[in-house]
Image (cartoon, rainbow, N blue to C red; front, side, top):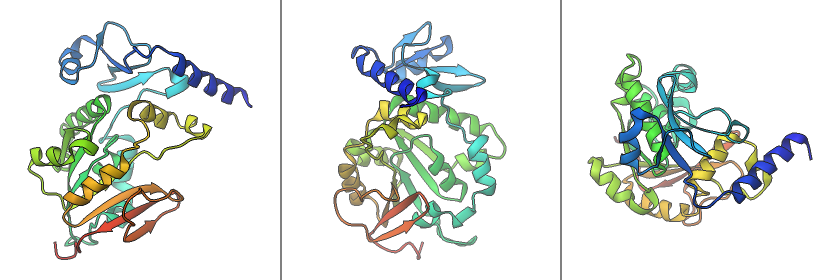
Length: 277
């Protein structure tokens, strides 16, 4: 085992030995009192022992031990990967656009979409940048807070403000309350997009630090079959599930179609055609 691997395993062991009473996320900063209260997270004067929501360089970030989690995490729709993908991502020719039924050309369909496992909102922002109206649902309070902050910053930017007008955000556990979260927004989704965490059982899960953070907060989405069932009940036209290319489908009905890329694929569960939108 290399020195780097030994460090990773040691850190994982430290996490397992840490006190179960420690909150996984705390909030730090005088200007974040309302946020901590609203999300029901502890407010501390100094960063917490594991993960901390705080302000840095004009944005909200979630950070911890960089050996384990890497650099502090933020959601960003203005710069970085989002800006590059907006300008050079391939438009409606992207796999996610095809999977979600966004038709080619200016007159192509632009369905109403729910991204029920929003994460950092990257897929939802791509779909909104291509003309779709998208509701993001995120169940982890800290990740929801990052999305909320990203939307507020994007609203102040001239290039992204028109795009985020097509984005909505809800804090809910979609596996338990998908119907209510959608009803509360008044959106009638034609497409529901799911990207549940794929359960890894080996040490490779220790490699990608951003994914390690998500796994610590959200777990392995063992309730994915229940989420798929709920989505199939609500989406009027199709449900789209993003999966690692070699992973099995989610337990339940078999997908009707598959769109495959180099590292991932989209399983499509189709109720009716989107061509007439």
